[in-house]
Length: 250
Image (tube, rainbow, N blue to C red; front, side, top):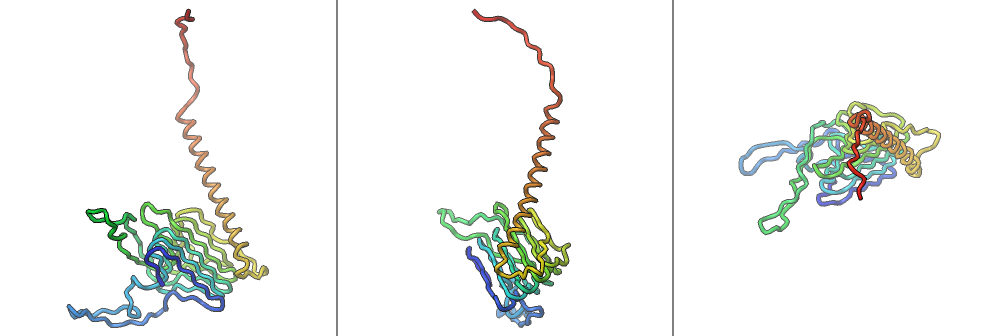
């Protein structure tokens, strides 16, 4: 499921599970009609066409009654969109796909010699897991994951955010494969006695947001203190100033 020109992706499965891709995709034999070369692709689709991806501007949100499994594919936003995943009674698993490095091209559009719009930069995608990506010049997107009764597992594929990252769960697994470019609050511990449900999203989100805000304020305070210290050092100790009066006018 993908959007190519600025659309959001919203998935709601209140009584079930979301699987971004099968753990053992069907291999389909493909023959090039010109060269006769044979290749095998997953389910008849190229890697570009697998997973939940917002290629241009766009966010992804999923709310499920059970688990969200990425398996061997991906949940990506590629132009600064946010990702929000809520697994009410299950787990969120980022999958076992390849954790390839991804570099996006500049966002500059292409125009012809008459200044007519031709195209955006070419669409491309590689790697697996849960990621918000942003090319140069675009603000990165944040990730908010909630599994109030379960586990958030970064798996082998990993979880990566270009901006903030908030995880709310009973447990976070494979945290070595989690990274963020902004304030990160690793875990909001959700008491099972609360009876967390979709209706409690606001409570958990508020707690997570407060933690991110606190981290941001602490970082800003540290930066301000460092800047003030540097300024004081550059000014140095007060110096004596000599003044000669040359006249009183008139």
